[in-house]
Length: 140
Ligand code: T46
Image (tube, rainbow, N blue to C red; front, side):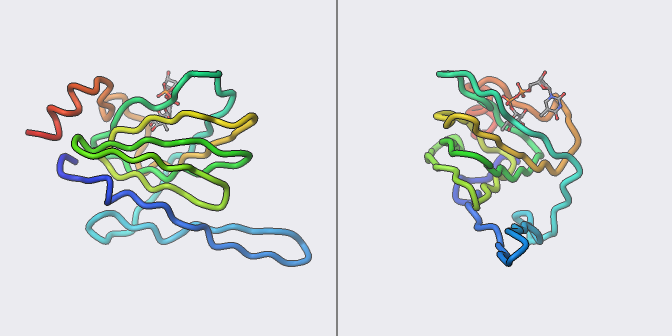
């Protein structure tokens, strides 16, 4: 999706229920930029972060994602070809990244665990790996 902006991405708060059994957090009813409900058929986990190594460093053409962090925090830089923003991802929040956004994940705290919900099955052809290709894609 070429015409998305970083303002289409949002940090949402998980709904939280605490009682004497413990805590339960919910995320549901996530909509795409046209207002249609998104299904998330894939989920993956990022861990074992190496010092001074970033993760991501690419964009997706069709994929919507929700990034959630358990244990610790990290910084996610998002870029839409013109503007960029650093987001400090913390427990209890989820970052919705729409298609057509470059992302770089860094500054992971020790033992960070990131869960990513993805709106499509894995498809290498959905990735844009080179930043210059991404900038060109966004300007076409
Ligand atoms: C993203 C960031 C936040 C698969 O075979 N299936 C999968 O579903 C995924 C996500 C990856 N892979 C393979 C492809 C590579 O051989 O796992 C290996 C590592 O993947 P990658 O280098 O893309 O990992 P990250 O952490 O840099 O990026 C991942 C996601 O790929 C990406 O969509 O936004 O997490």
